[in-house]
Length: 116
Length: 114
Image 1 (tube, rainbow over the protein chains, first blue to last red):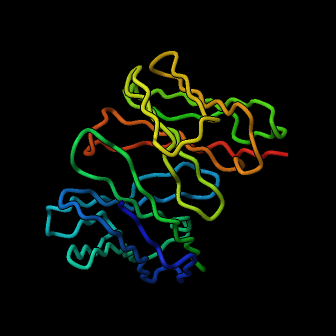
Image 2: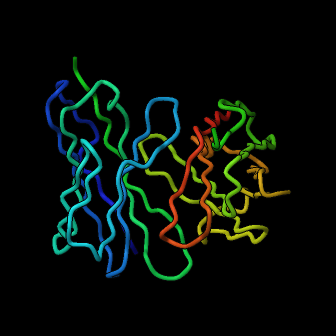
């Protein structure tokens, strides 16, 4: 069975600094997708960044980038130049790339605080 | 703006009293999902609809049911809520069921069982 582990329940970063959130996963599949979702307080979860497992190049979206280590089954999120609006719960998620399924398997989340 | 809407945002029900949570979408997506997110736990998929086809996860309790009367609306029915059913319930949609399609989430309904 596929699992996703986020070992940091809480993290804190100073505004304008860089922070890295960790995620590891376990799967026997070779075709899959990985995601980072952001869930601000009392607001909907939104997609931050996605990575296809077959792509070697790490995904980047503005201040957000990932370090995808397929052999190590590691998928960390780096937030550069942190802003107050980045404060949220961040979920790492896995999705099997085969078949017709669209099921997301989430980690337990990392609560990020941004200090002014 | 196209979006996923959940009503109510907060719901209190009594132990054993049936409750219905509502989700609507203006994205015209074919697939609608319900996730359960208990405190300090990962969101967990309960079931999803692909058009009118209902797909239940193997470990979803029978106490949880769903209805999708049309493309825009999907309901989560909890027939006899227990204290362990207190959680945030997230609705999500995607254009199609394949793994390459992004899921869009609503803000959630927080259910309290007294």
